[in-house]
Image (cartoon, rainbow, N blue to C red):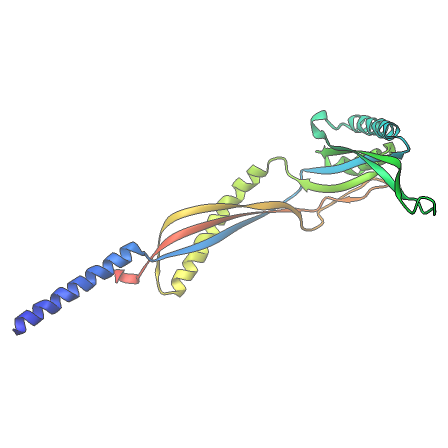
Length: 239
């Protein structure tokens, strides 16, 4: 009888060990870490969005005035060495101009008193030393609507290639620290997922690009790239 009890206990222990092993196989010890790579680079080009806006009593007159001024702006840009491929029309619009008739006879009704036309142009300036003079030139040529300025690089994918490996190294460093803190051994990589990143955010003044009328700070750009890495973990000594 005693032998049967010992045999039953042994079978239960064996089944328990098997169940634990199966559970560990189904739910392996793993750790997921996010790594980030960061790189500061000097801008290589600038993109400006500018336009011409004119108002007239007749729609045709407003659009004609806008077209004439924009032709002058484009001509000045070409004279400044801006290639046709670096200029692109972004928007052409026409809106009525409403005014409030406050006379007693009309009861304060609104009426159209004119039209406002606009033409918006995106311009890419590849020589940053000419950015200030280019802005000064187009303003003198008739551009009266300035919507923004941003800096960038000619090949963002090349920048991402430079920092992708740094993001993975950062994830491995973090995973090693966490595993050691938990008293575990870091195992092989199971998967790597990219989350991309961002760039183009100015950080600090790097140099000043100047003209007599338009000082421009080129600054410095920060690019980031993120990855998620899944690692196996094991108990030291294989316990």
